[in-house]
Structure formats: structure tokens, C-alpha cells
Image 1 (cartoon, rainbow, N blue to C red):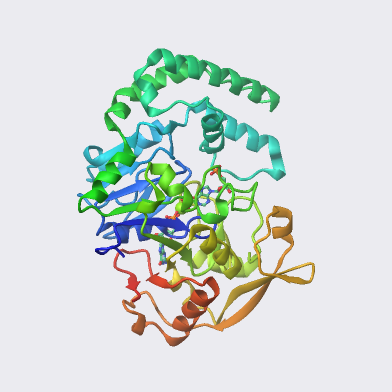
Image 2 (tube, helix red, strand yellow):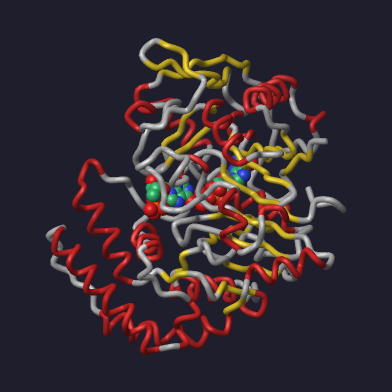
Length: 430
Ligand code: GDP
Ligand code: IMO
Ligand code: MG
């Protein structure tokens, strides 16, 4: 992926998250000098498998498993300090020293305990119309950021300023908790006490991520910007309101670390050979019943952050083409092809019908997305093990045909095919 001319790559999820971004980041990070997260927070769960050992990362970039790669969290991330410290210590306890090569943007906003309380209370109050969030406080933390009542890493140096923000934040949270009829209350003193335990360590990690990345690219560095969630969870371009609260798409990457978009050379979209979604919201190609159970079990589709069963479905070409446009994808990494190895036939969504009329566009309204009927192409299964294939030519004919159809429907060239969760289960496509 990286070469003389390709020095800065954005990696984005193309569907509703869990496409295998962690695995692909880990593969590309071998050639990178710096890997950055640019949005989202501990709602992400990125899995990396190294020598049979599984690491699930929520905040720290998936470049962490290479000892010489610098890892940074950009200003666009909402950072839960306690989760970050737990993650640093989890890695340390498993022999991965990260703290001396980890940086967090001094401009990054903090997720505070009352953000999580608000997330939980709102979800509980909404009952059956809930979004099914990860309850990591993401929406409330971004809301405080945009409402200009957020607390950033740099602010930790000024305890009086922190008190002002936290006092107001807790009071506002309490009014909302009261509105939702929740008895629990935010406690500004408890928040300040907890913050005091992490302040020194967070300030020591503080950096200017934009300046770092620009310096890296001005030298010989190679930078990977690792997206979290997926394009259909983007707050503007996803299945609103069943989305997360950040710009997950490539346009957010530059702003989320503090560089100009002109520095980005490639945008790689990570896409499963089928589709999954976790949480509520419309999903046109969703499977039900036994077919869903089969795909979920074969793909081990259970949330890396919440453990919830993921909702499985067929590959949706309309979703991927929508994401390709919004992200300006220059290439695709297709993951989990091996999960389809045992199917007699595989369906590929190539269009939608809305009220009996064919539509080429991805509808804006969740209610319309929930009503579309997918138009499928039936592809022959390959009924062979792809997990041991290491080149395009080794793949069965029918699998190559399926991938070619994905490429044509998405209108984006495939650059990588992943055939298992291990690092070496990867096929590079020229
Ligand atoms: P992310 O959030 O996009 O990083 O994806 P997750 O880590 O949440 O979920 C992807 C899951 O699929 C993880 O358990 C990975 O280990 C696994 N995985 C990634 N690529 C492949 C693949 O090509 N084949 C199989 N069978 N599993 C994969
Ligand atoms: P990675 O990076 C899959 C979903 C939640 C919910 C919606 C809003 O591992 O792909 P939030 O907690 O963000 O306010 O929840 O977004 N969601 C994810 N789904 N993978 C993720 O991350 C997700 N992060 C959030 O399930 O539907
Ligand atoms: Mg995940």
C-alpha cells in the first residue's frame, strides 16, 4: 500500500463497523511509522491477532503491536482517560510497551463519567426506539464538545478551569437525568477526584498530532489514519439517527488529526465479503432465522466492545457504492472471504426497489431505508477453503468471480483480500 508516492493513507470502514479495520490496520502498520485514530472513542473494538494471541483495542490505534510504530489519538477522538489507562496497562501486562510511543492530542475532548450516565439514561428512556449505543458516552461527549462545554486534555493543567467546566457539565447532566426520570446523579466532586488520578499521566502523553504528522511526512515517515466505526454510522452520511456522533468518513480524517486533506494520498475502504450491523437501525440485506445464525456463527459475529450478537446479512453493493462516493475510496480491502467458503450460493445486493420503483441512490431517511427491497444477484459458492490462499491465483474461480463482481458493483479496485484473522492470511492484489 505504502510506496514512494503513497505516504499517508486513510483507512475507513465501508459498512456499519466491524469490517476488520483492526486486522487491516495491523497488516498495513508493518510499513508505517505512525498510526493515528481520528474520531470516535472507546465505542470502537478493533481486533488484532498476532501469533495466535488476540488483542482488542478500543482507543489505542491497531499499529500498537509493532514495537517501533508511534501511535497517536487525534483531536477528533473523544478520549475516556480511564479506558485509555486500562488499555495501556493491558498491553503492558502482555509484554507490549506502548506508553513511551503513545501520544494524545492536547485538543482531544474527554469523555467524563456523566457522559456515560447520560448515554445510558437516554437509551433506557427511549425503550424500543433506542439506537443501541455502546453506552461509552460518545454522543453526550461530542454534544458537549460542539456546545462548547467540553473539557480537553490541555485543560487538565488548569484545575480551576476544570472545576468550572465540570460543575456546569454535571449540573446540566443532572437536569437531563431528572428529565429522563433517573435517580442517579452526576457528582462534580467525584469527577474532579477521579480526574486528579489521571491528570499527570494524560498531560505527559499530550502532543500536537497535526504537527507530528506533518513532520513525519516532511521526513521519511509513513502515516496511517485508522478510522473507527463505519461509513453508514457517519453522523451525516449514515442511517441517521441510527448512527454514531462523529464523522467516520475520510473527510473527517484530516480535521480529526490536524492536517490538510492535501496530505492524504489514498483512501482504503475496509469491507466485509458480507455485511453486519450491531445496534438498531435499518439494514436492507439483513438475514433472519437460520441463515442469519449460520453466518453469525461462521463469522464469529459478536461485538468486540459489548459482546452483543451482530446482525448478519448479504453484501450490499448500494451501501458500498454510497460509501465509495462519500469517502473518495481509492481501493478496497475485502475481509472475511473465508467465512463464505461453505455456502452453495452467495447473494450480492446490486440495487434497491422503493415502492416498486428501482432506485440507484441510498435513501436519506431511515424509514425509507427500512422499506427498500434489495435486488440480488446469485453467485455460485466456491465450496473450498480460502484460508490458506496467499495469492489471487490460488483463490477458487468462483471466489475470484465474486470478488470481481464486488469490484464492479462498488466501482473501486480491490487491493487486499483477507482470508482469516491472522496477520499472514492476506492476499495483495496488483
Ligand atoms: P473492526 O472493528 O473493523 O476492527 O472489526 P472487529 O475486530 O470488531 O471485528 C472483525 C472480526 O473479524 C475480528 O474478530 C477479527 O479477528 C476477524 N477477522 C478479521 N479479518 C478476518 C478474515 O479475513 N477472516 C475471518 N474469519 N476473520 C477475520
Ligand atoms: P468499530 O470501530 C460497530 C454503533 C452502535 C450503535 C451506534 C451508536 O469496532 O467498527 P455509539 O456508542 O457510537 O453512540 O453507538 O453505533 N457502533 C458500532 N458498531 N462497530 C463499532 O466500532 C461501533 N461503534 C459504534 O452499536 O448502533
Ligand atoms: Mg469492531
